[in-house]
Image 1 (tube, rainbow, N blue to C red):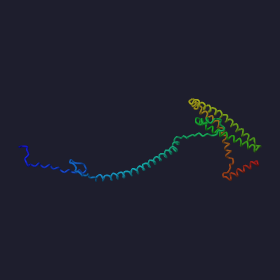
Image 2: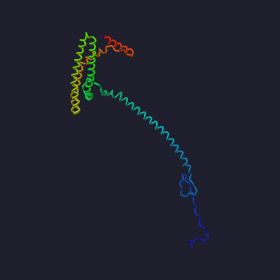
Image 3: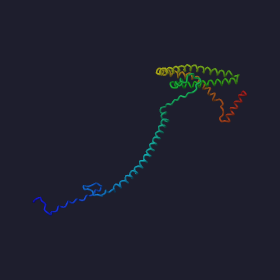
Image 4: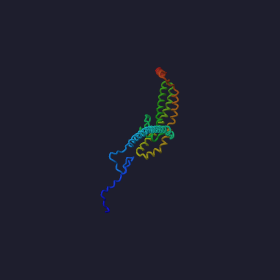
Length: 263
């Protein structure tokens, strides 16, 4: 009957399985790999030396390049600082035409103003301050000249009237200068106190009186400067001690002997 197996009929052979082709990249195909089959590791071994060589090759240039860049930056910074200093010293002040004023405390024996008032005049009345320093030095010069003329009159008593006449002239000019300057110093002292009490109104008073005080100081000094100019010319014409240790000492010894014998 249809559908029944015949006796002694052999079953058909199983279909042949096609051999699985090995993937060169080590991946599995559609078939199953056999037991004991291993992958080819040669490509992986060849890559490792290449990566190490690339790292060594890139590392050295970066190190050398960083040193060069650092040296270049330091050089540029040094040149920039030097250029800035040169510009500030040699160009800024010359272009601006301004000389920096620095206050230095000094002994002014003929000035009655307190130290803080003198500093105040330096800051707010610069022309008066300069005149004050000059006033002090001129008074000292006049006093020294009086001492010199007095000694000259004592040395030549028969001609003492000549020396006394010059001394009276000096004393007269010195007295006038001191009287005028005393008034100016009191005005400056009043400005200082006003400024300390109320800076706004005090500064306004400084602006109003500044020129008048400076002009008064210059006018008071003018006749005395003419007198001391002549005194300086006499001092410069007087014989001076020669230079050098031996010659200088000989000159001093000779002057001492002349004083002892009354020459």
